[in-house]
Length: 119
Image (cartoon, one colour):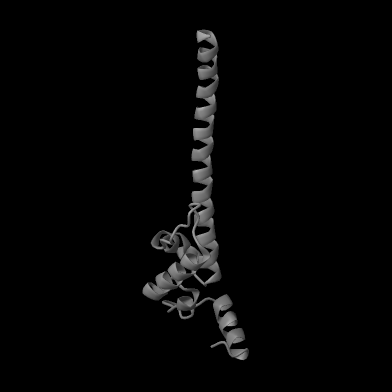
């Protein structure tokens, strides 16, 4: 009887470690999913791609009972970040001051923009 209990205990230990590892892996994947969802929301809201990682770090959405960010909290955080830091938005790139001489390609692009009324 003692050997049976000992064998059952040995059988139980690896299963517990495996389930703990699976739980940890699931938490890591959930965290990565949360960050990916915030990235997509930021891009869709118009965050400049070169400022994306900074914008994602500034956001702190609420977590639901499963450890995932809620859609409402993601939207609220994206709006809050863009309101507080408008320079992260793509529209902030509309005017970029130019310094120095322009090359022929830039002059041609400027002429095309003027023709279509973009300037």
